[in-house]
Length: 593
Image (cartoon, rainbow, N blue to C red; front, top):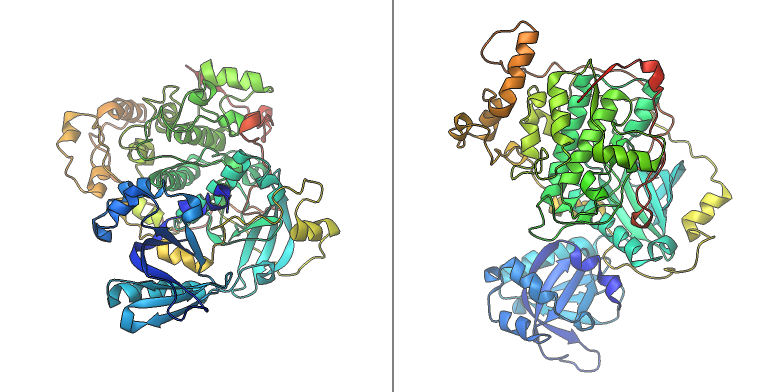
């Protein structure tokens, strides 16, 4: 059992953990082996046993009750336990028998002939473990036989995507297939695959993140079965539309992106690959962030704008100045990308577009920002804050995080509670949904790919088992969070004036609806004077009634970007131009700074 086989499993969230007495049952000895103390935890669908005598530090912890052990200290100790001393019991498809008299469970794995008896300190604890283990043992083994393959819908550098239907629920899903030959090509490629699988499970409960239904593997491929988004991606939507979005539509889309980004950052993850192609549109016209292949999990405390990752990756026109400089970075690079995304939605191109990679990088570092004259003062101010070249002062990179962006005047009309509930709104994008059921005959190449992976690649990785990769849809219920407005909006730690400082005890909603002041006050006064408005305060704008937006049809429906324009770390960001709109026909006049 190599370390790489456990790289994913040991990073999955704990479902249950604690001390227990364990012994291996033997057919030879009627009484089995002696009971010994283990630290026991369930991660993924595996029961992991850490022998208390494996290290001196763990032995000292064994005298402390489970509930009294601080999580950080425990993780540090468990990390020192030699991997070869761990005992793994696969629970999915196994058997569990309750031994009530001894407060114990007899566990028989589906993948091993050895059985174990695990005893707990009381009946209540034993029943909690028994219930979770029974849930796993009742789950069937997921495979391609679970699905009807409808048609191929995308192809990228790392794999292919197929539209499939779940035979049990009849739900359309997007099945992403990645050959193991590419995953095990290098340590970096394996790390990306592990991080993507882990982040997809951690973030899947959020309404604006693409939901993971199943993850499974064969001897040659890794499979992700995800929600299918019939609206395709924002890049395809704008190309079909042929003109930029209205400001009110861009406001709502960006607000949903900010909520998703806030959730991801709260998990200790930086996304690193925000772009139009990775923002998918579901059947209700809301967004779903997809493709976490470049995401990075940060260690505890790595939230500063100058700490965290250092790899050079992403899409070239979304690269931040600190990444170009080779500096360490944190969540601030995602908020820079939010500024680029907003500009592209409103202007039809990125702000630093150029024909060559070198010119793009040069403009990112030093070119002045230019904005079309039709844009409002509020949106220009927001983009200037997000596209601040200094990550220390960039909007969103301070102690308040996403709340600094959410309380910006540009979002004054957004009801964050309704937005999180995905309430219908007139500014939601309209999506044409077709109930496609007819299966087409797959090409021989697709059939071979689903069964064998990339036939032209090396045989590296074939037959290897990535422990903890399997995910069954119902597991999301165990980790699903209840999202409330208190989780969505946090008052910003740095207030903009003494007037706001006195309101620090406000509840989150009142805080957002207070009269604007501080550094945004001057901009608001200038805007009102230009409009002939001399009123001293701004009234609260309520969201408009639900309605329908503008229709469009898409030919490239996918729940995973099919138009990949980035290259992984070793080659740097991709070099494909981003001129998806005929800019010369737009006739945009600009003002520069």
